[in-house]
Each structure stands twice: as structure tokens, then as C-alpha cells.
Amino acid sequence: MKKSIILVALFALTMGTAKAQLFDFAYNRHNASIGLNLGVVGYHFGQGQIDKTYSGFGLGANLTLAGVYLDFIYQSPEHHWDRKVSPIVYHDHTALTINVGYKVPVTHWLFITPMVGYSNETTGLTDCSTVNVDYERRSIYHDYKRQTINNHFNYGVGLSLKLFKFIEIGGVCTSHAVYGSIALCSNKKK
Image 1 (cartoon, helix red, strand yellow):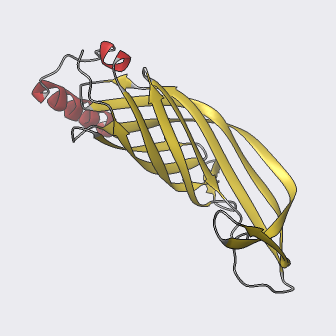
Image 2 (spheres, rainbow, N blue to C red; image 1 turned 120 degrees about the vertical axis):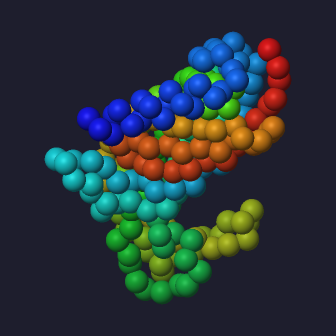
């Protein structure tokens, strides 16, 4: 209860000092952004505990047009891009999260984004004795054979701040991922 009162008080103080109209949805019609996501993907909550069996570092992207927010973050198998060729077969996993939401402009610099989406984790084997060449990356990679896939409904919330003219930073916390983002955004006026 005390935490709720403190959060409400901080929110009221923040809004009291803001020099913008609260929840001005007209702001969304004139702005867009594109950005990069970095963070942890693949964990999930279950029975009051966090299962980190399939979690790992992921990379993704985000896009906002007219207030509609889309993003994804993906973790590739750990040994897929390993440069060493050996007879070892590793047990690896992947994780993917795709979300859609709507950016609610609390003020002209603060946005809250409720979102829903899809998440999965796969387990499989990375065979380091196989060699494939990716000419665009100028690198080799090994075969990853998926054995199982776990599909999930994903939900969460994002918070973003437009502290600079064309830069927006934020964070997202969902039931299967926690990551930060940085985005380039338009600066059109209403």
C-alpha cells in the first residue's frame, strides 16, 4: 500500500511540473520513431518464480507510427556463429518475442506503452562439425536443429522518455523479456 501511495505522489509531482497537456493523443498523429532493442529474452514467470532456463542476451528493433508500437527481440543459439570447427554437438536454445502496443503520451516527453504479443523458446542441437558460409557477414556458422518449441502469450508495458530533440530512450518489461531501447524519432509539431 505504501508503494502505491509513493508512486501516485511521484506521478502527481511529475505532472505538476510538466508544462504540457496530459494525455494529448494528437501528438501521436504527427510523430514516428525507429530504434534498437537490447536485453534479456527467454525467461518466463511460473508459479511465483522466474524460470531462466532459456534466457539470454537478445537483439531486436522497434518501430512506432501514429502511436502504434511494434517491436521484436531475438536470441540466437549460443554456438551457432562459433568460429571453431569441432566434433562437439552443443545443446542450445533460442528465444523470440514480438509485441504490438499503443504509445500513450502522458506528456510531450513521457510515454507509457501497454503491449501484447507472442513469445517462444526453442531447444535444439548445434553441430559444430558442420560448416556453412554467410558471405554477407563474411563468417561461418553451424547447423542448429530445433527439437522442441514452447509458444507463449506475451504481455507487458514499456516506458519511454524523449529527453532530446530526436532521441528517445526507454525500457520494456514483459512476461518473457526485459530490454532497453534507443530510437530516432521525428520532431513534428501539431
